[in-house]
Structures are given as structure tokens and as C-alpha cells.
Image 1 (cartoon, rainbow, N blue to C red):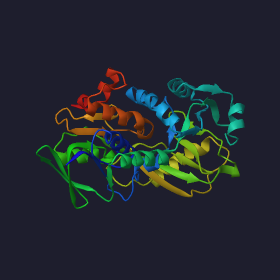
Image 2: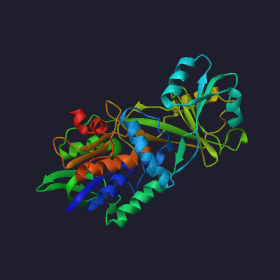
Image 3: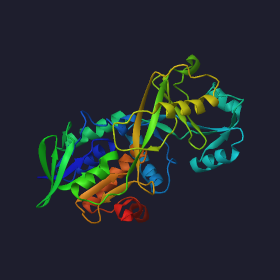
Image 4: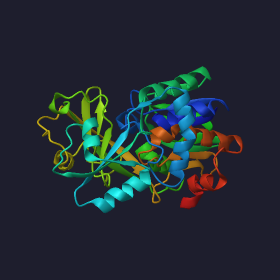
Length: 356
């Protein structure tokens, strides 16, 4: 019998497994062929401390030192664009994100395709940084292996049963036993709970679509900041010489291997096109991921109040990559009975108890 069985090999589950491996034996179960296949592999991969709300911001800030010290961050910047006539929405985002306003010509010097006929307001945050998501995921996986943990892929969970002293999990035709069960199932976390007979947390997956475009106008986009429309109605981010553009959609869906909705993608690309001088002439590829939310939009971290050996690591809501270092540390601290570094009120706002 293992000390911990972790279900879900995305960033959340892999980081939690690596931290828990310092406390006991761990088996990590992932239903796909490789770790990080779903949302973790389809992230915009940007670290912006002021993105999110409430306890999410505390997790962002608590993750910053880990991300920086391990070399996962690199300069990017975030530029906010407001349409003419949207001064109020633009000002609200500037305040929430702690940005500095720019003159349009300053912004065009950074991103020459901005359309002076439609862009009315611009602002910049130089603190936003790219995250090397793949390297961070692989480093957590290496740490898990180094501590004696085991990772099993191609292992979809089909049954969970209570046994004396813990849990029995059937996955990929094999049976695993553990004293504690960690639910890092992403969009499937409530389904995992149902298999275990644990009350749901009301998780709602929402689709986020993305298109990969050739560099607009043949420009070198490598030094451009990430662009975001006021109200987060779209965003665009340089990626390996191309430009990723998203309609920033958040349509409720059932858990599945997500794919982009063509109409939603077209509408988002149109909103992007309104703010630039270069038309979209070709979409090289598209994809989508699922961002999962509970009612208050805040992560759900820690032991279930009714069954403490069932541990939640869910509801990341699009913030799972940048919060992973601190979220996984919090889970390990709670399990070990250590006092978390986070303020007690923040911890209480993250516990699943609040949803019961």
C-alpha cells in the first residue's frame, strides 16, 4: 500500500506528487500516454502576479520566488489595448492589473501593427513573464522519480473503493492501494470524487480556444509583449516565431479532450483584427483546453472535510501553471500537519470546507 495515490498527471497532480514524495511513497496515475496532455500542455504560459482574484493572487505571489530561482521565467510583458469609446473598461483593467498607461505611439513602437484608427488606449506591465511550462513539469516529474515515486501513464481510473486503511483504485486494468487519495483530475475531478463516493465541489469546465497564426506582416514578433483586449475579450501571444490568438472564450462544456469551436474562434480573430493593421490571412493550426472553476472561481486545495484522506487539488480556473509551486506546497504542508507559509485566512479560502 502506497502512502499517496495521485490521480491526474497535469501540472497540478505532478507538482503535488513531487512534494508528497518527500512525505511517503507515491504513485501518480495519468490516463493519457504522457504527462501534461490536457490543459497543462495548452496554456498561455504567462506569469502575471496580478492576474486573478483573492487567494489566487496570494498563490501567484507565493510561487514567484520558486519560478524565478529555478529559471522558469523569461521577459515578455503584457500590453492592454482599449478600443476608442471603452475608457471605463480599460481603466478598470489597468487598475486591477497594476499597469502603466502608454501613449499610442509608444505602444506602436513596441508593436507596429496596432491600428491607430481603432486603438484608443494602451497600457503595459513589464512584470509579466513567460513560464517554461514543459521544463517545470518535467522537473517536478524528475523530483518525483528521485524520491522513489512511480508514474503510471495510460491508466484511466475506472473504479475507486474504500478498503481498510485507505483506498483501492482500478486504473488501466491494474489495481493500486493507497492510504491517501489525491484528486488532481482537472476537468474530471468531480467525476473522480463520484467514483470515490465523495461529495462534488460543483466543478464546471470551460473551453478556451486558440489559433496559431503566421507572424503578422512578416514581423519578428519574438520581442513583442502579450496583447490583451480590455475586458479580456481576446489576447495574442508570440510563440516560436508565430502568434497565438485566443477569443478568451469560457464556454461551459463537459469534460473531454477539448477542440476549438470554429465559430467562436472566428469571432475572436475578428476582435483581434479590429485592433491591428494586418488582416488574418491564414490559420496554421488551432487547439483548445479546459479551464475548470468552482462557484467562487478559487482553487480547491486540501483534505475533504468529510473524508480527510481524500485530498483535493482542483478548480485551477486557468491559473494552474503559475500557482502550482505554492499550491502543491500548501497541500504537502496540510497533509504533514505543518503550518503553511500562507496566511490562515487565505488557506481557509482555499480549503474544500467552504463549498460544503
